[in-house]
Image (cartoon, rainbow, N blue to C red; front, side, top):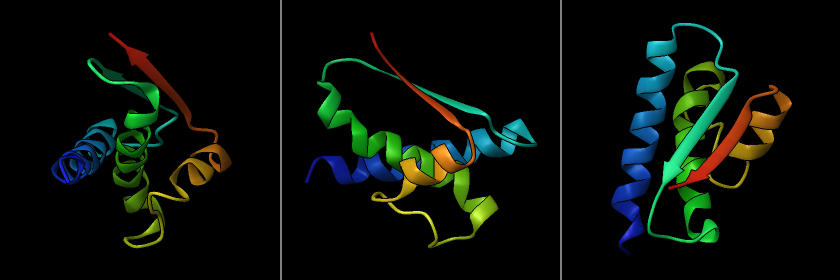
Length: 82
């Protein structure tokens, strides 16, 4: 599907952002255009996988539980439609 490459990119961006933060991440803002909110949710979860995987270990966070792990760590997630 068309979304699979975007999931990979979102996860990589999450890992990069987490590494650049250099410490605890307390928020994630995803800005997007040209789609509806339901279509963006898997990409947000993929970015969270990237952010959380270095803390929780690879394979612990997935598309289903990423938001749960973020909420448990008080990571605020904001989606901004442009």
